[in-house]
Image (cartoon, rainbow, N blue to C red; front, top):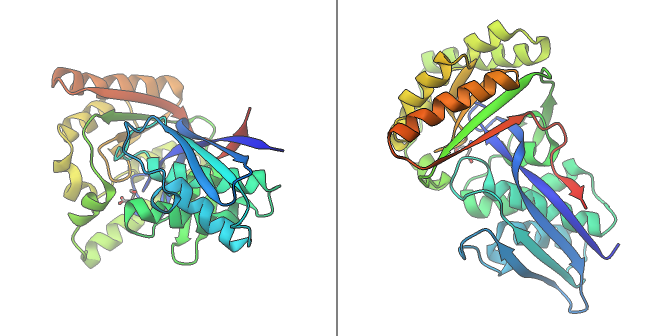
Length: 310
Ligand code: HSE
């Protein structure tokens, strides 16, 4: 194989209830990465699109490039001539795991080109090093779902002990992205470093309830559990009209609605495709009335994660 092309999906970090420890892979949007052999030794990024000129072609300063470089170093293949193309199909600082998708795509594409010496789980540390460049912190709640698909629990970020959870087939997401940029680094900066024992107890109950509902398909339990009592109140003011959008989604029948990752995107989890479309429409109407440009993504849970495409 001389060339491969891969699709790395967007993801919803935190999955409403599990800050830095849960993430959901979406079917769309996602980034496309091409890797091909070249005669010139070393890794080069030869094309980037969809970034409005903001990304660096220096592999050391590009999330896809750094992930690929770290993988090549690990495999002792840094001297091989490889060209990467990075085609972005989602905005930066959107809360959709844009940098994680590129990092996952970079590591996966180069691994595939080399004949897949490593498994997807084994690629996680390299994608994480790429993602860390953008997010400034080590949390796998976007990288792991983009790589593996599904709803993923990060049991431990340090050792990348990640567990794929089941999800009911009719679980759908409506994600609205208002065109306001919030970089993860700054959205993490607003968070208080401590929580109270009571907050811990309440939020752990939500997390446990949500996880049980994924296993059992108990949507009433899921609805009771989909609340973020710790992070959402601290970040809501960064997103214009957040509480109105959240109310619109729940009034339209969403099971739960909160900030997607570090925002500004807002996710509503819903039972069924039609319910997601209704919640999405309701959320959009708030931004439309406020004159804020936005985009809606409707998606089932993506069970596959990153994959080769033609
Ligand atoms: N868990 C991360 C956060 C996701 O909320 O800051 C964003 O990358």
